[in-house]
Length: 136
Length: 136
Length: 136
Image 1 (cartoon, helix red, strand yellow):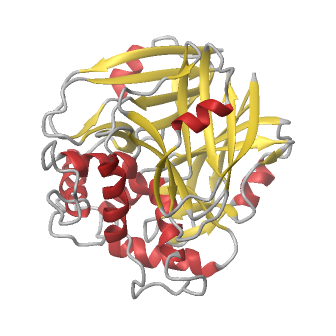
Image 2 (cartoon, helix red, strand yellow; image 1 turned 90 degrees about the vertical axis):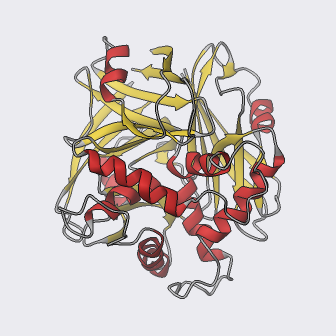
Image 3 (spheres, one colour; image 1 turned 45 degrees about the vertical axis):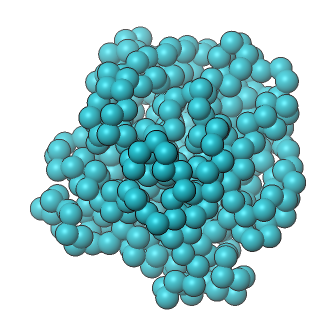
């Protein structure tokens, strides 16, 4: 069985944000067993699984990914939408814009330390649309 | 219900190529709701979602990812298949070789600016095989 | 139909390890057509598809990804769990901690040269939990 829902996230500041509880709250009736797929409908944001505890991990994601994929690189030609735009496109494909998570006994079956990160790569990304698909 | 199909892409030049319409043309009867999974059956190519409009984004993907994962790096030992081979393997795992896309009301439910990129990381990759799986 | 199973991998040394046969052995009765989803329940390990033949490819993954995402970078603030910890979190999101693989005629439908890599990013990661979900 397929259940689908589109949701809107509020505008987050640039960086990495834990949204596990937001997603769970949108899906109060998860099946006993299945999978949840999440798509971010944008090309300058991303979604990934990572540590849900120490905020310094999310801070270092922002710090280091900006080193790995910097603004104003000499090879960029797509510069008309601001210095944060082309790096945001690259980060979206390197981190990814969709994930699948198993559902077991009516809950997201993540590891103890795993949470869902929404990754806002633009300085002012505004609200963002996600498609949630549950199949069971 | 599961529907599966293998398709062959023609040899693309090294770079990032929009294949959204090719994929849609291969799947004329999408279900009302479901998911599409695409696997690239190769270890030196990839697939990702990114901007479907300005070609300069795809040009900058080729430019920048070659900076991030260069040819002829001093640490490479797997050099027997050409200088473009080991970077192609690395890019395939960093960008990814499979994606899942939601299907809603009989269409791929992507964002307005999202398209499917086929990523050819070899200089002469030749034709490439993909597995398309639709579940509904 | 959904089938789910959790498995434990033994402690692997830091690096990239082919686990295709391990996964196949855990799933002796694959359906005729479907998909397999694999989640690594950890934030300092990963899973990806790449070359299943020459071990030098896996060696160069370890060599190069350590250059791309180094230890002891000046921007890291999350340093309390050892110099290999923060890079491991970053690698887990760049490589990814979950994949989906098509199943065709009762077998994983991978390319001839594709295998499943389990990626241990910690020096001493210990045993690791995976969730396998087969849907058909």
